[in-house]
Length: 427
Image (cartoon, rainbow, N blue to C red):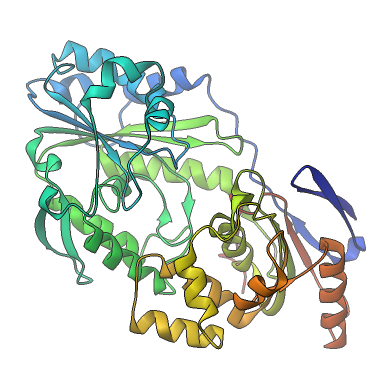
Protein backbone atom coordinates (compact mmCIF):
# COMPACT_ATOMS: atom_id res chain seq x y z
CA UNK A 1 0.00 0.00 0.00
CA UNK A 2 1.43 3.35 -1.02
CA UNK A 3 -0.16 6.71 -0.24
CA UNK A 4 0.74 10.37 -0.51
CA UNK A 5 -0.30 12.55 2.41
CA UNK A 6 -0.71 16.33 1.95
CA UNK A 7 1.52 18.63 4.01
CA UNK A 8 1.86 22.35 3.32
CA UNK A 9 2.79 22.67 -0.38
CA UNK A 10 4.07 19.11 -0.73
CA UNK A 11 3.14 15.50 -0.03
CA UNK A 12 4.73 12.82 2.12
CA UNK A 13 4.86 9.26 0.77
CA UNK A 14 3.69 6.50 3.09
CA UNK A 15 4.17 2.82 2.29
CA UNK A 16 3.40 -0.40 4.16
CA UNK A 17 2.30 -3.99 3.39
CA UNK A 18 -1.28 -4.40 2.19
CA UNK A 19 -1.95 -6.95 4.92
CA UNK A 20 -1.52 -4.24 7.57
CA UNK A 21 -4.29 -2.03 6.19
CA UNK A 22 -7.43 -2.03 8.31
CA UNK A 23 -9.19 0.71 6.33
CA UNK A 24 -8.72 3.96 4.47
CA UNK A 25 -11.62 6.10 5.66
CA UNK A 26 -12.84 9.38 4.16
CA UNK A 27 -16.16 11.24 4.26
CA UNK A 28 -18.74 9.50 2.11
CA UNK A 29 -19.85 10.82 -1.23
CA UNK A 30 -23.28 12.45 -1.01
CA UNK A 31 -25.39 13.47 -3.98
CA UNK A 32 -26.92 16.86 -3.26
CA UNK A 33 -30.42 17.38 -4.61
CA UNK A 34 -29.58 20.47 -6.64
CA UNK A 35 -28.00 23.83 -5.91
CA UNK A 36 -27.82 25.42 -2.47
CA UNK A 37 -30.76 27.63 -3.43
CA UNK A 38 -32.85 24.65 -4.54
CA UNK A 39 -31.98 22.66 -1.41
CA UNK A 40 -33.04 25.55 0.86
CA UNK A 41 -36.22 26.21 -1.12
CA UNK A 42 -37.23 22.57 -0.80
CA UNK A 43 -36.52 22.56 2.95
CA UNK A 44 -38.65 25.67 3.49
CA UNK A 45 -41.46 24.23 1.35
CA UNK A 46 -41.53 21.01 3.40
CA UNK A 47 -40.93 21.94 7.06
CA UNK A 48 -40.12 19.16 9.53
CA UNK A 49 -42.16 18.22 12.56
CA UNK A 50 -45.09 19.91 14.22
CA UNK A 51 -45.67 23.58 13.58
CA UNK A 52 -46.41 26.02 10.81
CA UNK A 53 -44.98 26.88 7.44
CA UNK A 54 -42.55 29.80 7.52
CA UNK A 55 -45.16 32.19 6.13
CA UNK A 56 -47.71 31.23 8.76
CA UNK A 57 -45.03 31.27 11.47
CA UNK A 58 -44.13 34.88 10.70
CA UNK A 59 -47.70 36.12 10.30
CA UNK A 60 -48.66 38.49 13.12
CA UNK A 61 -45.10 38.85 14.38
CA UNK A 62 -43.75 42.25 15.35
CA UNK A 63 -40.16 41.58 16.50
CA UNK A 64 -38.18 38.92 14.65
CA UNK A 65 -34.76 37.73 15.87
CA UNK A 66 -32.61 35.67 13.51
CA UNK A 67 -29.66 33.82 15.06
CA UNK A 68 -26.72 33.41 12.67
CA UNK A 69 -23.27 31.82 12.98
CA UNK A 70 -20.02 33.76 13.11
CA UNK A 71 -17.21 33.44 10.59
CA UNK A 72 -15.60 30.46 12.32
CA UNK A 73 -18.34 28.25 10.87
CA UNK A 74 -18.74 27.47 7.16
CA UNK A 75 -22.54 27.76 7.35
CA UNK A 76 -23.96 29.25 4.10
CA UNK A 77 -25.59 32.06 6.07
CA UNK A 78 -25.91 34.46 3.13
CA UNK A 79 -27.78 31.83 1.10
CA UNK A 80 -30.06 31.04 4.04
CA UNK A 81 -30.90 34.72 4.57
CA UNK A 82 -31.53 35.19 0.86
CA UNK A 83 -34.04 32.34 1.00
CA UNK A 84 -35.70 33.79 4.10
CA UNK A 85 -36.00 37.43 3.03
CA UNK A 86 -39.04 37.11 0.69
CA UNK A 87 -41.04 35.59 3.57
CA UNK A 88 -39.77 38.22 6.00
CA UNK A 89 -40.63 41.08 3.63
CA UNK A 90 -44.10 39.68 2.98
CA UNK A 91 -44.70 39.57 6.75
CA UNK A 92 -43.62 43.23 7.00
CA UNK A 93 -40.66 42.44 9.24
CA UNK A 94 -37.75 43.55 7.08
CA UNK A 95 -37.43 46.97 8.72
CA UNK A 96 -37.26 47.95 12.37
CA UNK A 97 -38.87 44.71 13.46
CA UNK A 98 -35.87 42.65 12.35
CA UNK A 99 -32.70 41.93 14.35
CA UNK A 100 -29.92 39.53 13.43
CA UNK A 101 -27.66 38.34 16.25
CA UNK A 102 -24.31 36.71 15.57
CA UNK A 103 -24.10 33.67 17.82
CA UNK A 104 -20.46 34.18 18.72
CA UNK A 105 -20.53 32.11 21.90
CA UNK A 106 -17.35 33.12 23.72
CA UNK A 107 -15.64 34.20 20.48
CA UNK A 108 -14.78 37.79 19.63
CA UNK A 109 -17.03 40.04 17.55
CA UNK A 110 -16.81 39.68 13.76
CA UNK A 111 -14.69 42.16 11.85
CA UNK A 112 -16.33 44.16 9.07
CA UNK A 113 -14.65 41.86 6.57
CA UNK A 114 -16.19 38.89 8.36
CA UNK A 115 -19.62 40.56 8.36
CA UNK A 116 -19.28 40.88 4.59
CA UNK A 117 -18.33 37.19 4.44
CA UNK A 118 -21.31 36.19 6.60
CA UNK A 119 -23.94 38.38 4.92
CA UNK A 120 -22.67 38.31 1.33
CA UNK A 121 -24.82 40.37 -1.02
CA UNK A 122 -27.12 41.25 1.90
CA UNK A 123 -24.39 43.15 3.74
CA UNK A 124 -25.80 46.51 2.57
CA UNK A 125 -29.46 46.05 3.57
CA UNK A 126 -28.85 43.92 6.69
CA UNK A 127 -25.61 45.12 8.30
CA UNK A 128 -27.36 47.79 10.35
CA UNK A 129 -29.80 45.18 11.65
CA UNK A 130 -26.91 43.03 13.01
CA UNK A 131 -25.67 42.86 16.58
CA UNK A 132 -23.10 40.46 17.96
CA UNK A 133 -23.42 38.44 21.11
CA UNK A 134 -20.87 39.33 23.78
CA UNK A 135 -20.83 36.54 26.35
CA UNK A 136 -18.88 38.67 28.84
CA UNK A 137 -21.46 41.48 28.89
CA UNK A 138 -23.45 40.37 31.93
CA UNK A 139 -25.82 43.32 31.64
CA UNK A 140 -26.95 41.97 28.25
CA UNK A 141 -28.02 38.61 29.75
CA UNK A 142 -31.19 37.32 31.35
CA UNK A 143 -30.95 34.57 33.94
CA UNK A 144 -33.54 31.84 33.44
CA UNK A 145 -32.65 29.11 35.92
CA UNK A 146 -30.34 26.17 36.41
CA UNK A 147 -30.04 23.00 34.31
CA UNK A 148 -30.25 19.43 35.58
CA UNK A 149 -26.44 19.41 35.64
CA UNK A 150 -26.19 22.59 37.72
CA UNK A 151 -25.30 24.99 34.91
CA UNK A 152 -26.50 28.57 35.63
CA UNK A 153 -28.56 29.40 32.57
CA UNK A 154 -28.34 32.96 31.24
CA UNK A 155 -29.04 33.93 27.62
CA UNK A 156 -28.92 37.17 25.65
CA UNK A 157 -31.80 39.57 26.42
CA UNK A 158 -32.50 40.01 22.71
CA UNK A 159 -33.95 36.51 22.79
CA UNK A 160 -36.68 37.58 25.22
CA UNK A 161 -37.51 40.81 23.39
CA UNK A 162 -38.55 38.93 20.24
CA UNK A 163 -41.92 37.37 19.53
CA UNK A 164 -40.55 35.28 16.66
CA UNK A 165 -37.15 33.54 16.51
CA UNK A 166 -35.42 31.92 13.54
CA UNK A 167 -32.36 29.80 14.37
CA UNK A 168 -29.95 29.05 11.53
CA UNK A 169 -26.84 26.90 11.45
CA UNK A 170 -25.09 23.83 10.11
CA UNK A 171 -24.93 20.32 11.51
CA UNK A 172 -21.85 18.11 11.62
CA UNK A 173 -20.26 15.79 14.21
CA UNK A 174 -18.80 17.61 17.20
CA UNK A 175 -16.17 16.08 19.42
CA UNK A 176 -17.97 16.68 22.73
CA UNK A 177 -21.48 18.00 21.93
CA UNK A 178 -22.23 15.01 19.66
CA UNK A 179 -23.27 17.27 16.79
CA UNK A 180 -23.23 20.99 16.07
CA UNK A 181 -26.37 22.91 15.11
CA UNK A 182 -29.94 23.11 16.39
CA UNK A 183 -29.97 23.78 20.12
CA UNK A 184 -26.34 24.94 19.91
CA UNK A 185 -27.57 28.27 18.45
CA UNK A 186 -28.75 29.16 21.96
CA UNK A 187 -26.11 27.45 24.11
CA UNK A 188 -23.29 28.30 23.61
CA UNK A 189 -24.33 30.59 20.72
CA UNK A 190 -25.97 33.39 22.71
CA UNK A 191 -25.27 32.29 26.27
CA UNK A 192 -23.42 34.09 29.05
CA UNK A 193 -19.74 33.30 29.59
CA UNK A 194 -20.45 31.61 32.94
CA UNK A 195 -23.06 29.44 31.22
CA UNK A 196 -20.70 28.44 28.43
CA UNK A 197 -17.87 27.68 30.85
CA UNK A 198 -20.08 25.47 33.04
CA UNK A 199 -21.52 23.73 29.98
CA UNK A 200 -18.10 23.04 28.46
CA UNK A 201 -16.81 21.65 31.76
CA UNK A 202 -19.26 18.80 31.14
CA UNK A 203 -17.08 17.87 28.16
CA UNK A 204 -14.83 16.15 30.72
CA UNK A 205 -17.45 13.38 30.95
CA UNK A 206 -16.65 10.22 28.93
CA UNK A 207 -20.22 10.45 27.60
CA UNK A 208 -19.45 13.79 25.94
CA UNK A 209 -18.13 12.64 22.60
CA UNK A 210 -18.70 12.77 18.88
CA UNK A 211 -21.96 11.28 17.50
CA UNK A 212 -23.43 10.78 20.99
CA UNK A 213 -26.57 12.70 21.99
CA UNK A 214 -28.44 10.42 24.38
CA UNK A 215 -26.82 10.60 27.80
CA UNK A 216 -24.38 13.31 26.71
CA UNK A 217 -24.39 15.92 29.52
CA UNK A 218 -23.29 18.74 27.18
CA UNK A 219 -26.26 18.01 24.90
CA UNK A 220 -28.58 17.70 27.91
CA UNK A 221 -27.54 21.15 29.09
CA UNK A 222 -28.32 22.62 25.68
CA UNK A 223 -31.70 20.93 25.65
CA UNK A 224 -32.58 22.26 29.11
CA UNK A 225 -32.45 25.82 27.80
CA UNK A 226 -35.14 25.33 25.17
CA UNK A 227 -38.33 25.05 27.29
CA UNK A 228 -37.40 28.34 28.98
CA UNK A 229 -37.63 30.26 25.70
CA UNK A 230 -41.22 31.44 25.31
CA UNK A 231 -41.26 32.86 21.77
CA UNK A 232 -41.91 30.37 18.97
CA UNK A 233 -38.84 29.13 17.10
CA UNK A 234 -38.40 28.24 13.43
CA UNK A 235 -35.17 26.54 12.40
CA UNK A 236 -33.13 26.30 9.20
CA UNK A 237 -30.26 23.79 9.43
CA UNK A 238 -27.84 22.92 6.63
CA UNK A 239 -25.45 20.01 6.19
CA UNK A 240 -22.25 20.53 4.22
CA UNK A 241 -20.26 17.94 2.30
CA UNK A 242 -16.51 17.35 2.57
CA UNK A 243 -15.93 20.26 0.16
CA UNK A 244 -17.99 22.55 2.44
CA UNK A 245 -20.79 22.82 -0.10
CA UNK A 246 -24.46 22.48 0.87
CA UNK A 247 -25.50 18.83 0.64
CA UNK A 248 -28.82 18.92 2.51
CA UNK A 249 -31.04 21.18 4.59
CA UNK A 250 -33.94 20.82 7.00
CA UNK A 251 -36.31 23.49 8.28
CA UNK A 252 -39.27 23.85 10.63
CA UNK A 253 -39.46 22.66 14.23
CA UNK A 254 -36.10 23.20 15.96
CA UNK A 255 -35.47 19.66 17.14
CA UNK A 256 -37.19 17.88 14.24
CA UNK A 257 -35.06 19.78 11.74
CA UNK A 258 -31.95 19.18 13.86
CA UNK A 259 -32.50 15.42 13.99
CA UNK A 260 -33.21 15.31 10.26
CA UNK A 261 -29.93 17.14 9.61
CA UNK A 262 -28.12 14.79 12.00
CA UNK A 263 -29.16 11.83 9.86
CA UNK A 264 -27.73 13.49 6.75
CA UNK A 265 -24.54 14.39 8.62
CA UNK A 266 -24.12 10.80 9.75
CA UNK A 267 -24.36 9.62 6.14
CA UNK A 268 -21.61 12.00 5.06
CA UNK A 269 -19.11 12.09 7.91
CA UNK A 270 -19.53 8.79 9.76
CA UNK A 271 -17.53 5.95 8.27
CA UNK A 272 -17.84 2.42 9.63
CA UNK A 273 -14.57 0.64 10.38
CA UNK A 274 -14.37 -3.12 10.97
CA UNK A 275 -12.29 -2.98 14.18
CA UNK A 276 -10.17 -0.70 16.30
CA UNK A 277 -6.74 -0.09 14.84
CA UNK A 278 -3.32 -0.60 16.38
CA UNK A 279 -2.10 2.47 14.48
CA UNK A 280 -4.09 5.45 13.21
CA UNK A 281 -2.59 7.94 10.77
CA UNK A 282 -4.78 11.05 10.90
CA UNK A 283 -4.18 14.02 8.59
CA UNK A 284 -5.36 17.55 9.39
CA UNK A 285 -5.87 19.00 5.92
CA UNK A 286 -5.82 22.68 5.00
CA UNK A 287 -7.25 24.87 6.49
CA UNK A 288 -7.53 22.80 9.69
CA UNK A 289 -3.74 22.43 9.79
CA UNK A 290 -3.49 26.06 10.84
CA UNK A 291 -2.67 25.19 14.46
CA UNK A 292 -2.80 22.39 17.00
CA UNK A 293 -6.00 23.75 18.55
CA UNK A 294 -7.87 23.02 15.29
CA UNK A 295 -5.86 19.90 14.44
CA UNK A 296 -6.89 18.35 17.75
CA UNK A 297 -10.09 17.28 15.97
CA UNK A 298 -7.97 14.91 13.87
CA UNK A 299 -6.52 13.51 17.10
CA UNK A 300 -9.94 13.07 18.65
CA UNK A 301 -11.47 11.38 15.60
CA UNK A 302 -8.46 9.12 15.20
CA UNK A 303 -8.42 8.25 18.88
CA UNK A 304 -12.01 7.03 18.72
CA UNK A 305 -10.89 4.08 16.58
CA UNK A 306 -7.57 3.37 18.29
CA UNK A 307 -6.86 0.46 20.60
CA UNK A 308 -5.43 1.22 24.03
CA UNK A 309 -1.67 0.98 23.83
CA UNK A 310 -1.67 1.86 20.15
CA UNK A 311 -0.05 4.69 18.20
CA UNK A 312 -1.70 7.77 16.74
CA UNK A 313 0.30 9.62 14.08
CA UNK A 314 -0.88 13.17 13.44
CA UNK A 315 0.15 14.79 10.17
CA UNK A 316 -0.41 18.53 10.51
CA UNK A 317 1.93 21.44 9.86
CA UNK A 318 0.40 23.55 12.68
CA UNK A 319 1.76 26.41 10.56
CA UNK A 320 0.53 29.11 12.95
CA UNK A 321 1.59 27.31 16.11
CA UNK A 322 -0.42 26.13 19.10
CA UNK A 323 -3.52 28.26 18.57
CA UNK A 324 -4.38 28.87 22.23
CA UNK A 325 -1.90 29.07 25.06
CA UNK A 326 -4.31 28.23 27.89
CA UNK A 327 -4.77 24.54 27.11
CA UNK A 328 -1.11 24.17 26.06
CA UNK A 329 0.11 25.85 29.25
CA UNK A 330 -2.00 23.55 31.39
CA UNK A 331 -0.52 20.48 29.72
CA UNK A 332 3.04 21.86 29.88
CA UNK A 333 2.69 22.51 33.61
CA UNK A 334 1.53 18.94 34.27
CA UNK A 335 3.86 16.06 35.09
CA UNK A 336 1.75 13.48 33.25
CA UNK A 337 -1.57 13.14 31.39
CA UNK A 338 -3.18 11.94 34.61
CA UNK A 339 -1.84 14.99 36.45
CA UNK A 340 -3.28 17.24 33.73
CA UNK A 341 -6.72 15.68 34.09
CA UNK A 342 -6.52 16.04 37.89
CA UNK A 343 -5.65 19.73 37.56
CA UNK A 344 -8.48 20.33 35.10
CA UNK A 345 -11.04 18.70 37.37
CA UNK A 346 -9.84 20.74 40.34
CA UNK A 347 -9.80 24.13 38.57
CA UNK A 348 -11.61 24.29 35.25
CA UNK A 349 -11.29 27.24 32.88
CA UNK A 350 -12.94 27.61 29.50
CA UNK A 351 -10.70 25.90 26.97
CA UNK A 352 -9.37 23.24 29.35
CA UNK A 353 -11.71 20.66 27.80
CA UNK A 354 -9.34 20.68 24.81
CA UNK A 355 -6.42 19.80 27.09
CA UNK A 356 -8.51 17.12 28.77
CA UNK A 357 -9.32 15.37 25.49
CA UNK A 358 -5.64 15.40 24.53
CA UNK A 359 -4.53 14.17 27.95
CA UNK A 360 -7.05 11.34 27.91
CA UNK A 361 -5.72 10.16 24.55
CA UNK A 362 -2.03 10.47 25.44
CA UNK A 363 -2.75 8.61 28.68
CA UNK A 364 -3.80 5.47 26.79
CA UNK A 365 -1.80 5.67 23.56
CA UNK A 366 1.40 7.08 22.11
CA UNK A 367 1.01 10.19 19.96
CA UNK A 368 3.53 11.13 17.28
CA UNK A 369 3.25 14.28 15.19
CA UNK A 370 4.72 15.36 11.87
CA UNK A 371 4.58 19.11 12.39
CA UNK A 372 6.39 22.43 12.22
CA UNK A 373 6.14 22.65 16.01
CA UNK A 374 9.40 22.04 17.82
CA UNK A 375 10.14 18.72 19.46
CA UNK A 376 10.44 20.46 22.83
CA UNK A 377 7.03 22.09 22.51
CA UNK A 378 5.39 18.86 21.41
CA UNK A 379 7.03 16.92 24.24
CA UNK A 380 5.52 19.37 26.74
CA UNK A 381 2.12 18.29 25.37
CA UNK A 382 2.97 14.56 25.67
CA UNK A 383 3.51 14.23 21.91
CA UNK A 384 6.65 12.93 20.20
CA UNK A 385 7.90 14.77 17.13
CA UNK A 386 8.48 12.65 14.01
CA UNK A 387 10.44 13.79 10.93
CA UNK A 388 8.04 12.09 8.50
CA UNK A 389 4.94 9.89 8.50
CA UNK A 390 7.02 6.98 7.20
CA UNK A 391 9.51 7.16 10.07
CA UNK A 392 6.69 7.50 12.59
CA UNK A 393 4.88 4.50 11.11
CA UNK A 394 8.00 2.34 10.89
CA UNK A 395 8.76 3.04 14.55
CA UNK A 396 5.21 2.22 15.61
CA UNK A 397 5.19 -1.03 13.63
CA UNK A 398 8.50 -2.11 15.16
CA UNK A 399 7.29 -1.35 18.69
CA UNK A 400 4.04 -3.29 18.23
CA UNK A 401 5.81 -6.28 16.67
CA UNK A 402 8.18 -6.31 19.63
CA UNK A 403 5.09 -6.74 21.82
CA UNK A 404 4.09 -9.82 19.82
CA UNK A 405 1.57 -8.24 17.45
CA UNK A 406 2.67 -9.81 14.18
CA UNK A 407 0.41 -7.81 11.84
CA UNK A 408 -0.51 -4.48 13.41
CA UNK A 409 -3.59 -3.02 11.75
CA UNK A 410 -3.43 0.52 10.35
CA UNK A 411 -6.31 2.96 9.85
CA UNK A 412 -5.66 5.89 7.52
CA UNK A 413 -7.74 9.09 7.86
CA UNK A 414 -6.70 11.35 4.95
CA UNK A 415 -9.08 14.05 6.22
CA UNK A 416 -9.05 13.34 9.94
CA UNK A 417 -10.70 16.55 11.14
CA UNK A 418 -14.03 15.74 9.48
CA UNK A 419 -13.99 11.94 9.25
CA UNK A 420 -15.58 10.22 12.24
CA UNK A 421 -14.86 6.49 12.44
CA UNK A 422 -17.98 4.68 13.62
CA UNK A 423 -16.94 1.94 16.04
CA UNK A 424 -20.36 1.53 17.65
CA UNK A 425 -20.54 -2.13 16.59
CA UNK A 426 -16.93 -2.92 17.50
CA UNK A 427 -15.98 -4.57 20.77
